[in-house]
Length: 454
Image 1 (cartoon, rainbow, N blue to C red):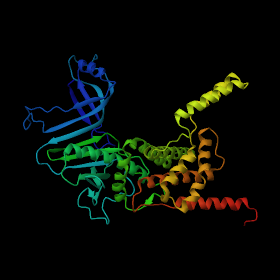
Image 2 (image 1 turned 180 degrees about the horizontal axis):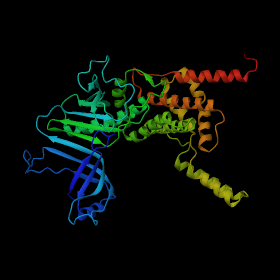
Image 3 (image 1 turned 90 degrees about the vertical axis):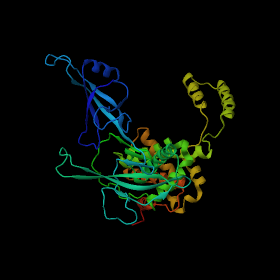
Image 4 (image 1 turned 135 degrees about the vertical axis):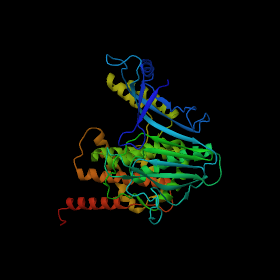
Protein backbone atom coordinates (compact mmCIF):
# COMPACT_ATOMS: atom_id res chain seq x y z
CA UNK A 1 0.00 0.00 0.00
CA UNK A 2 1.03 3.61 -0.53
CA UNK A 3 -0.11 6.50 1.62
CA UNK A 4 1.00 9.72 3.28
CA UNK A 5 2.59 9.62 6.72
CA UNK A 6 3.98 11.77 9.51
CA UNK A 7 7.17 10.55 11.19
CA UNK A 8 7.24 11.36 14.88
CA UNK A 9 9.76 11.13 17.71
CA UNK A 10 8.74 11.03 21.35
CA UNK A 11 10.88 12.73 23.98
CA UNK A 12 12.85 9.70 25.34
CA UNK A 13 14.00 8.61 21.84
CA UNK A 14 16.92 9.77 19.70
CA UNK A 15 15.27 8.81 16.38
CA UNK A 16 11.82 8.26 14.90
CA UNK A 17 9.83 5.78 16.96
CA UNK A 18 6.33 6.00 15.47
CA UNK A 19 4.49 6.98 12.34
CA UNK A 20 0.99 8.37 11.77
CA UNK A 21 -0.54 7.13 8.49
CA UNK A 22 -2.90 9.42 6.58
CA UNK A 23 -5.46 8.32 4.02
CA UNK A 24 -9.04 7.31 3.37
CA UNK A 25 -11.32 4.40 4.09
CA UNK A 26 -9.70 2.16 1.45
CA UNK A 27 -6.29 2.71 3.03
CA UNK A 28 -7.73 1.82 6.42
CA UNK A 29 -9.05 -1.49 5.07
CA UNK A 30 -5.63 -2.30 3.61
CA UNK A 31 -3.99 -1.53 6.96
CA UNK A 32 -6.39 -3.88 8.74
CA UNK A 33 -5.15 -6.78 6.61
CA UNK A 34 -1.58 -6.03 7.77
CA UNK A 35 -2.39 -5.46 11.43
CA UNK A 36 -1.07 -8.78 12.77
CA UNK A 37 2.20 -8.91 10.78
CA UNK A 38 5.46 -7.01 10.75
CA UNK A 39 5.32 -4.16 8.26
CA UNK A 40 8.22 -3.18 6.02
CA UNK A 41 8.09 0.47 4.97
CA UNK A 42 10.15 2.89 2.88
CA UNK A 43 9.96 6.60 2.14
CA UNK A 44 9.00 7.63 -1.40
CA UNK A 45 11.47 9.76 -3.39
CA UNK A 46 9.75 11.90 -5.99
CA UNK A 47 12.06 12.04 -9.06
CA UNK A 48 10.16 15.10 -10.36
CA UNK A 49 11.10 17.12 -7.29
CA UNK A 50 14.07 19.50 -7.78
CA UNK A 51 17.37 17.80 -6.95
CA UNK A 52 15.93 14.28 -7.05
CA UNK A 53 16.47 11.53 -9.61
CA UNK A 54 15.76 7.83 -10.15
CA UNK A 55 19.23 6.56 -9.16
CA UNK A 56 18.18 5.95 -5.52
CA UNK A 57 21.21 7.61 -3.96
CA UNK A 58 19.37 8.22 -0.69
CA UNK A 59 17.03 5.58 0.78
CA UNK A 60 15.14 5.49 4.07
CA UNK A 61 13.35 2.29 5.05
CA UNK A 62 12.58 0.16 8.08
CA UNK A 63 10.14 -2.12 9.86
CA UNK A 64 7.39 -1.73 12.41
CA UNK A 65 4.06 -2.92 13.80
CA UNK A 66 0.61 -1.40 13.63
CA UNK A 67 -0.43 -0.20 17.07
CA UNK A 68 -3.94 0.87 16.11
CA UNK A 69 -6.18 1.31 13.08
CA UNK A 70 -8.97 3.89 13.40
CA UNK A 71 -12.07 5.13 11.59
CA UNK A 72 -11.85 7.51 8.63
CA UNK A 73 -15.49 8.49 8.34
CA UNK A 74 -18.09 10.23 10.46
CA UNK A 75 -20.84 12.83 10.57
CA UNK A 76 -18.32 15.67 10.80
CA UNK A 77 -15.82 14.23 8.28
CA UNK A 78 -16.20 15.02 4.59
CA UNK A 79 -16.33 12.13 2.12
CA UNK A 80 -12.97 11.47 0.46
CA UNK A 81 -10.96 13.54 2.96
CA UNK A 82 -7.58 12.45 4.30
CA UNK A 83 -7.58 11.37 7.93
CA UNK A 84 -5.21 9.68 10.33
CA UNK A 85 -6.28 6.05 10.08
CA UNK A 86 -3.42 4.14 11.77
CA UNK A 87 -0.48 4.40 14.17
CA UNK A 88 2.69 2.47 13.35
CA UNK A 89 5.34 1.71 15.99
CA UNK A 90 8.73 1.79 14.27
CA UNK A 91 10.95 -1.11 15.33
CA UNK A 92 13.97 0.12 13.39
CA UNK A 93 14.76 2.36 10.46
CA UNK A 94 17.77 2.61 8.17
CA UNK A 95 19.14 5.53 6.20
CA UNK A 96 21.34 4.46 3.27
CA UNK A 97 23.41 6.73 1.04
CA UNK A 98 24.95 5.30 -2.13
CA UNK A 99 27.83 7.40 -3.46
CA UNK A 100 31.24 6.42 -4.84
CA UNK A 101 34.53 6.95 -2.97
CA UNK A 102 32.86 7.39 0.38
CA UNK A 103 35.53 6.10 2.75
CA UNK A 104 37.28 3.24 4.50
CA UNK A 105 35.20 0.20 5.42
CA UNK A 106 34.10 0.17 9.06
CA UNK A 107 31.25 -0.97 11.30
CA UNK A 108 30.24 0.94 14.39
CA UNK A 109 27.84 -0.40 17.03
CA UNK A 110 26.36 1.71 19.84
CA UNK A 111 24.37 0.26 22.70
CA UNK A 112 21.97 1.74 25.20
CA UNK A 113 23.38 0.95 28.64
CA UNK A 114 25.78 3.69 29.67
CA UNK A 115 28.30 1.95 31.90
CA UNK A 116 30.08 3.64 34.76
CA UNK A 117 33.56 3.00 33.31
CA UNK A 118 34.02 3.00 29.53
CA UNK A 119 37.65 3.80 28.63
CA UNK A 120 37.07 5.17 25.15
CA UNK A 121 39.82 7.74 25.75
CA UNK A 122 42.72 5.31 25.89
CA UNK A 123 45.37 5.26 28.62
CA UNK A 124 44.93 8.90 29.59
CA UNK A 125 41.83 11.07 29.16
CA UNK A 126 42.24 13.43 26.24
CA UNK A 127 40.86 16.92 25.85
CA UNK A 128 37.51 16.62 24.10
CA UNK A 129 37.54 18.31 20.68
CA UNK A 130 34.36 16.71 19.33
CA UNK A 131 31.22 15.23 20.79
CA UNK A 132 32.68 11.75 20.29
CA UNK A 133 35.86 10.07 21.53
CA UNK A 134 37.82 7.09 20.25
CA UNK A 135 40.26 4.84 22.05
CA UNK A 136 43.27 2.90 20.73
CA UNK A 137 42.95 -0.05 18.37
CA UNK A 138 43.35 -3.72 19.34
CA UNK A 139 43.61 -6.58 16.86
CA UNK A 140 41.27 -9.57 17.25
CA UNK A 141 43.68 -12.55 17.10
CA UNK A 142 43.11 -15.02 14.29
CA UNK A 143 40.98 -12.65 12.23
CA UNK A 144 41.28 -9.79 9.79
CA UNK A 145 39.64 -7.37 12.23
CA UNK A 146 40.59 -4.73 14.75
CA UNK A 147 38.38 -2.90 17.22
CA UNK A 148 38.37 0.09 19.50
CA UNK A 149 36.06 1.56 22.13
CA UNK A 150 34.18 4.72 21.13
CA UNK A 151 31.90 7.14 22.90
CA UNK A 152 29.37 8.73 20.53
CA UNK A 153 27.97 12.07 21.67
CA UNK A 154 24.48 13.38 20.91
CA UNK A 155 23.18 16.83 21.82
CA UNK A 156 19.54 16.76 22.88
CA UNK A 157 17.67 20.04 23.29
CA UNK A 158 14.12 18.70 23.49
CA UNK A 159 12.06 21.15 25.57
CA UNK A 160 9.70 18.31 26.47
CA UNK A 161 12.46 16.96 28.71
CA UNK A 162 14.56 19.92 29.80
CA UNK A 163 15.32 23.53 29.01
CA UNK A 164 19.02 22.70 29.07
CA UNK A 165 21.03 21.20 26.23
CA UNK A 166 21.90 17.66 27.27
CA UNK A 167 24.96 15.73 26.08
CA UNK A 168 24.23 12.02 25.80
CA UNK A 169 27.36 9.88 25.45
CA UNK A 170 26.55 6.45 24.08
CA UNK A 171 29.19 3.72 24.47
CA UNK A 172 30.05 1.78 21.35
CA UNK A 173 32.60 -0.30 19.51
CA UNK A 174 34.06 0.35 16.07
CA UNK A 175 35.39 -2.56 13.98
CA UNK A 176 37.57 -2.26 10.87
CA UNK A 177 39.46 -4.72 8.69
CA UNK A 178 43.23 -4.83 9.09
CA UNK A 179 43.64 -5.60 5.36
CA UNK A 180 41.47 -4.86 2.31
CA UNK A 181 38.67 -7.41 2.03
CA UNK A 182 35.29 -8.00 0.44
CA UNK A 183 32.65 -5.66 1.87
CA UNK A 184 29.95 -8.29 2.38
CA UNK A 185 32.40 -10.71 4.05
CA UNK A 186 33.70 -7.96 6.34
CA UNK A 187 30.22 -6.88 7.47
CA UNK A 188 29.19 -10.49 8.13
CA UNK A 189 32.31 -11.16 10.22
CA UNK A 190 31.92 -7.81 12.04
CA UNK A 191 28.32 -8.65 12.98
CA UNK A 192 29.45 -12.04 14.30
CA UNK A 193 32.23 -10.46 16.39
CA UNK A 194 29.76 -7.87 17.67
CA UNK A 195 27.54 -10.65 19.03
CA UNK A 196 30.52 -12.18 20.85
CA UNK A 197 31.42 -8.77 22.25
CA UNK A 198 27.92 -8.43 23.64
CA UNK A 199 28.43 -11.70 25.53
CA UNK A 200 31.74 -10.43 26.90
CA UNK A 201 30.35 -7.03 27.86
CA UNK A 202 27.31 -8.55 29.57
CA UNK A 203 29.68 -10.52 31.78
CA UNK A 204 32.21 -7.76 32.41
CA UNK A 205 29.76 -4.94 33.15
CA UNK A 206 27.07 -7.20 34.61
CA UNK A 207 24.19 -5.82 32.58
CA UNK A 208 22.36 -6.70 29.39
CA UNK A 209 23.47 -4.96 26.19
CA UNK A 210 20.67 -3.56 24.00
CA UNK A 211 21.95 -2.52 20.52
CA UNK A 212 20.72 0.98 19.73
CA UNK A 213 22.43 2.06 16.49
CA UNK A 214 24.62 0.53 13.79
CA UNK A 215 26.62 2.40 11.18
CA UNK A 216 28.25 0.57 8.26
CA UNK A 217 30.64 2.52 6.05
CA UNK A 218 31.84 1.15 2.74
CA UNK A 219 33.55 2.41 -0.38
CA UNK A 220 30.26 3.10 -2.19
CA UNK A 221 28.36 4.76 0.68
CA UNK A 222 27.09 4.14 4.18
CA UNK A 223 24.02 2.93 6.07
CA UNK A 224 22.86 3.99 9.52
CA UNK A 225 20.28 1.89 11.40
CA UNK A 226 18.43 3.04 14.51
CA UNK A 227 16.41 0.81 16.80
CA UNK A 228 13.51 2.41 18.62
CA UNK A 229 14.60 2.08 22.23
CA UNK A 230 13.87 4.77 24.79
CA UNK A 231 16.88 6.45 26.39
CA UNK A 232 16.70 6.07 30.17
CA UNK A 233 18.71 8.17 32.64
CA UNK A 234 22.06 6.73 33.66
CA UNK A 235 21.69 4.44 36.66
CA UNK A 236 23.66 4.97 39.83
CA UNK A 237 26.40 2.44 40.48
CA UNK A 238 24.91 -0.03 42.96
CA UNK A 239 27.66 -2.67 42.92
CA UNK A 240 30.63 -1.97 45.18
CA UNK A 241 32.90 -4.52 43.49
CA UNK A 242 32.06 -3.52 39.91
CA UNK A 243 35.34 -4.83 38.49
CA UNK A 244 35.02 -8.57 37.90
CA UNK A 245 38.72 -8.87 37.14
CA UNK A 246 41.94 -6.90 36.91
CA UNK A 247 43.35 -6.15 33.47
CA UNK A 248 42.80 -4.18 30.29
CA UNK A 249 39.15 -4.13 29.23
CA UNK A 250 40.13 -3.56 25.59
CA UNK A 251 42.42 -6.60 25.45
CA UNK A 252 39.81 -8.63 27.29
CA UNK A 253 37.27 -7.83 24.55
CA UNK A 254 39.63 -8.36 21.62
CA UNK A 255 41.18 -11.62 22.85
CA UNK A 256 37.93 -12.87 24.33
CA UNK A 257 36.16 -12.41 20.98
CA UNK A 258 38.82 -14.61 19.38
CA UNK A 259 38.38 -17.29 22.07
CA UNK A 260 34.61 -17.38 21.67
CA UNK A 261 35.05 -18.19 17.98
CA UNK A 262 35.67 -21.79 19.12
CA UNK A 263 32.15 -21.81 20.61
CA UNK A 264 30.38 -20.52 17.50
CA UNK A 265 27.64 -23.15 17.73
CA UNK A 266 26.96 -22.34 21.39
CA UNK A 267 26.70 -18.54 21.22
CA UNK A 268 23.02 -18.48 22.16
CA UNK A 269 23.55 -20.64 25.25
CA UNK A 270 26.62 -18.62 26.25
CA UNK A 271 24.59 -15.43 25.99
CA UNK A 272 21.83 -16.97 28.12
CA UNK A 273 24.42 -18.01 30.71
CA UNK A 274 26.05 -14.58 31.10
CA UNK A 275 22.63 -12.91 31.02
CA UNK A 276 21.52 -15.05 33.97
CA UNK A 277 24.73 -14.12 35.82
CA UNK A 278 24.12 -10.42 35.15
CA UNK A 279 20.47 -10.70 36.21
CA UNK A 280 21.57 -12.02 39.60
CA UNK A 281 22.83 -8.49 40.36
CA UNK A 282 19.54 -6.89 39.28
CA UNK A 283 17.24 -9.35 41.07
CA UNK A 284 14.74 -7.98 43.58
CA UNK A 285 15.65 -10.60 46.22
CA UNK A 286 18.56 -12.80 47.20
CA UNK A 287 16.55 -15.95 46.44
CA UNK A 288 15.91 -14.90 42.84
CA UNK A 289 19.53 -13.85 42.42
CA UNK A 290 20.82 -17.23 43.62
CA UNK A 291 18.44 -19.09 41.33
CA UNK A 292 19.51 -17.02 38.33
CA UNK A 293 23.21 -17.54 39.00
CA UNK A 294 23.07 -21.30 39.63
CA UNK A 295 21.05 -21.75 36.42
CA UNK A 296 23.68 -19.66 34.62
CA UNK A 297 26.40 -21.99 35.96
CA UNK A 298 24.48 -25.00 34.66
CA UNK A 299 24.17 -23.47 31.18
CA UNK A 300 27.87 -22.60 31.11
CA UNK A 301 28.83 -26.11 32.20
CA UNK A 302 26.62 -27.51 29.42
CA UNK A 303 28.48 -25.36 26.84
CA UNK A 304 31.86 -26.65 28.04
CA UNK A 305 30.60 -30.24 28.03
CA UNK A 306 29.40 -29.96 24.43
CA UNK A 307 32.65 -28.44 23.19
CA UNK A 308 34.86 -30.92 25.04
CA UNK A 309 32.78 -33.99 24.23
CA UNK A 310 31.84 -34.78 27.84
CA UNK A 311 28.69 -36.80 28.47
CA UNK A 312 26.50 -36.16 31.47
CA UNK A 313 24.95 -39.66 31.32
CA UNK A 314 26.72 -42.34 33.36
CA UNK A 315 25.46 -45.20 31.17
CA UNK A 316 25.16 -45.07 27.36
CA UNK A 317 21.68 -45.08 25.84
CA UNK A 318 21.96 -48.52 24.23
CA UNK A 319 23.33 -50.13 27.39
CA UNK A 320 20.67 -48.51 29.53
CA UNK A 321 17.91 -49.91 27.31
CA UNK A 322 19.01 -53.44 28.04
CA UNK A 323 19.52 -52.73 31.75
CA UNK A 324 16.14 -51.06 32.17
CA UNK A 325 14.44 -53.95 30.33
CA UNK A 326 15.82 -56.40 32.88
CA UNK A 327 14.84 -54.14 35.79
CA UNK A 328 11.29 -53.75 34.48
CA UNK A 329 11.00 -57.51 34.22
CA UNK A 330 12.00 -57.95 37.86
CA UNK A 331 9.12 -55.76 38.96
CA UNK A 332 6.71 -58.61 38.26
CA UNK A 333 8.02 -60.50 41.31
CA UNK A 334 7.23 -57.58 43.65
CA UNK A 335 3.84 -56.84 45.15
CA UNK A 336 3.54 -53.29 43.81
CA UNK A 337 0.46 -51.17 43.46
CA UNK A 338 -0.52 -49.73 40.10
CA UNK A 339 0.79 -46.28 40.98
CA UNK A 340 4.07 -47.63 42.41
CA UNK A 341 4.67 -49.75 39.33
CA UNK A 342 4.02 -46.77 36.99
CA UNK A 343 6.29 -44.45 39.02
CA UNK A 344 9.19 -46.91 39.06
CA UNK A 345 8.90 -47.61 35.33
CA UNK A 346 8.79 -43.87 34.64
CA UNK A 347 12.03 -43.38 36.58
CA UNK A 348 13.67 -46.24 34.68
CA UNK A 349 12.91 -44.49 31.39
CA UNK A 350 15.63 -41.89 32.10
CA UNK A 351 19.33 -42.69 31.93
CA UNK A 352 21.24 -42.18 35.20
CA UNK A 353 23.32 -39.03 34.90
CA UNK A 354 25.84 -37.04 36.89
CA UNK A 355 24.55 -34.54 39.43
CA UNK A 356 25.14 -30.83 38.89
CA UNK A 357 27.84 -30.84 41.58
CA UNK A 358 29.67 -33.69 39.86
CA UNK A 359 29.43 -31.96 36.50
CA UNK A 360 30.81 -28.70 37.91
CA UNK A 361 33.68 -30.50 39.66
CA UNK A 362 34.50 -32.38 36.46
CA UNK A 363 34.72 -29.13 34.45
CA UNK A 364 36.84 -27.49 37.19
CA UNK A 365 39.23 -30.45 37.10
CA UNK A 366 39.36 -30.12 33.31
CA UNK A 367 40.30 -26.43 33.53
CA UNK A 368 43.04 -27.32 36.02
CA UNK A 369 45.51 -24.50 36.62
CA UNK A 370 42.84 -21.82 36.31
CA UNK A 371 41.71 -22.71 39.82
CA UNK A 372 44.06 -21.89 42.70
CA UNK A 373 44.27 -22.95 46.35
CA UNK A 374 42.46 -19.77 47.27
CA UNK A 375 39.45 -21.09 45.34
CA UNK A 376 39.26 -24.26 47.46
CA UNK A 377 37.28 -22.49 50.18
CA UNK A 378 34.82 -21.24 47.56
CA UNK A 379 34.42 -24.68 45.98
CA UNK A 380 34.13 -26.48 49.31
CA UNK A 381 30.56 -25.24 49.72
CA UNK A 382 29.41 -26.34 46.27
CA UNK A 383 26.93 -28.90 47.63
CA UNK A 384 25.55 -26.36 50.11
CA UNK A 385 25.01 -23.79 47.34
CA UNK A 386 23.13 -26.24 45.09
CA UNK A 387 21.10 -27.57 48.04
CA UNK A 388 19.97 -24.08 49.02
CA UNK A 389 19.01 -23.31 45.44
CA UNK A 390 16.95 -26.53 45.30
CA UNK A 391 15.29 -25.56 48.57
CA UNK A 392 14.19 -22.26 47.02
CA UNK A 393 12.88 -23.65 43.72
CA UNK A 394 10.83 -26.28 45.59
CA UNK A 395 8.97 -23.60 47.52
CA UNK A 396 10.73 -23.85 50.87
CA UNK A 397 12.18 -20.90 52.76
CA UNK A 398 15.86 -20.19 53.35
CA UNK A 399 16.16 -19.95 57.11
CA UNK A 400 19.42 -17.96 57.35
CA UNK A 401 19.60 -14.80 55.26
CA UNK A 402 23.34 -14.45 55.91
CA UNK A 403 23.97 -17.91 54.50
CA UNK A 404 21.74 -17.06 51.55
CA UNK A 405 23.91 -14.03 50.79
CA UNK A 406 27.11 -16.09 51.10
CA UNK A 407 25.80 -18.76 48.72
CA UNK A 408 24.89 -16.05 46.22
CA UNK A 409 28.44 -14.67 46.46
CA UNK A 410 29.78 -18.21 46.05
CA UNK A 411 27.69 -18.87 42.94
CA UNK A 412 28.88 -15.64 41.31
CA UNK A 413 32.51 -16.47 42.11
CA UNK A 414 32.16 -19.96 40.61
CA UNK A 415 30.55 -18.60 37.45
CA UNK A 416 33.28 -15.97 37.09
CA UNK A 417 35.97 -18.61 37.49
CA UNK A 418 34.37 -20.93 34.93
CA UNK A 419 33.88 -18.16 32.37
CA UNK A 420 37.30 -16.52 32.69
CA UNK A 421 39.02 -19.91 32.56
CA UNK A 422 36.93 -20.70 29.50
CA UNK A 423 38.37 -17.61 27.83
CA UNK A 424 41.90 -18.10 29.23
CA UNK A 425 42.85 -14.54 28.31
CA UNK A 426 46.36 -13.50 29.33
CA UNK A 427 46.64 -10.46 31.56
CA UNK A 428 43.26 -10.99 33.24
CA UNK A 429 43.08 -12.03 36.90
CA UNK A 430 39.92 -12.64 38.90
CA UNK A 431 38.83 -10.68 41.93
CA UNK A 432 39.46 -12.37 45.30
CA UNK A 433 36.75 -10.54 47.23
CA UNK A 434 34.40 -13.56 47.22
CA UNK A 435 36.94 -15.85 48.86
CA UNK A 436 37.65 -13.25 51.56
CA UNK A 437 33.95 -12.76 52.33
CA UNK A 438 33.32 -16.52 52.55
CA UNK A 439 36.35 -16.91 54.84
CA UNK A 440 35.01 -14.23 57.19
CA UNK A 441 31.54 -15.82 57.30
CA UNK A 442 32.87 -19.30 58.02
CA UNK A 443 35.17 -17.95 60.72
CA UNK A 444 32.23 -16.23 62.44
CA UNK A 445 30.18 -19.40 62.14
CA UNK A 446 33.00 -21.41 63.72
CA UNK A 447 33.28 -18.94 66.60
CA UNK A 448 29.54 -18.99 67.17
CA UNK A 449 29.57 -22.79 67.32
CA UNK A 450 32.46 -22.92 69.86
CA UNK A 451 31.26 -21.71 73.31
CA UNK A 452 34.88 -21.41 74.50
CA UNK A 453 35.74 -18.81 71.88
CA UNK A 454 35.42 -15.16 72.95
